Amino acid sequence: MYFQFRELGRGYRQVYIGPDDEKAQAMINRIRDRNEFLADQKTHIMDLARAFNAAGGYAMDHASLKVIKGFAVAGIMQPGAGQATLVGTYAYNLLGNVLIKAYDQTTRQVRT
Image 1 (cartoon, rainbow, N blue to C red):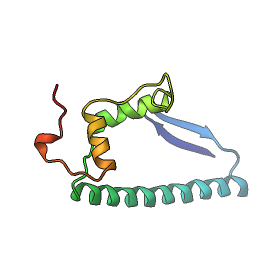
Image 2 (image 1 turned 60 degrees about the horizontal axis):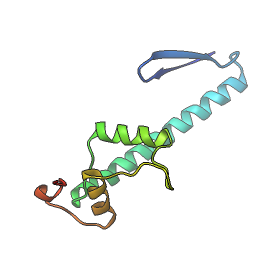
Image 3 (image 1 turned 180 degrees about the vertical axis):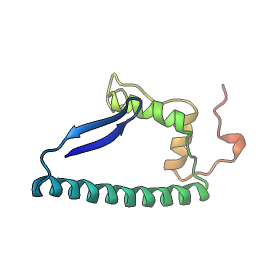
């Protein structure tokens, strides 16, 4: 029995799970249950994001979030001395979100 999935940027992969027996079926059921749970969580998070945006929160564009997440995964955005610091428009809007401050469109950008 094989498990097939898609890796981002790499295409599809297959991993051998084992013979088609009760143990493999139990693993498939655990994976299916986890995927259903994650789908429910994603729906809940999207509902919260829509409410946040409707209340005036600042949502970052997808490309910028990917870059910041990449920094975080690489360990660059960790707290402490010698680490990177987020500055500029994104930091300004993040603080506005934390302080529950809704900005109009003209004050969302940091001007130098």
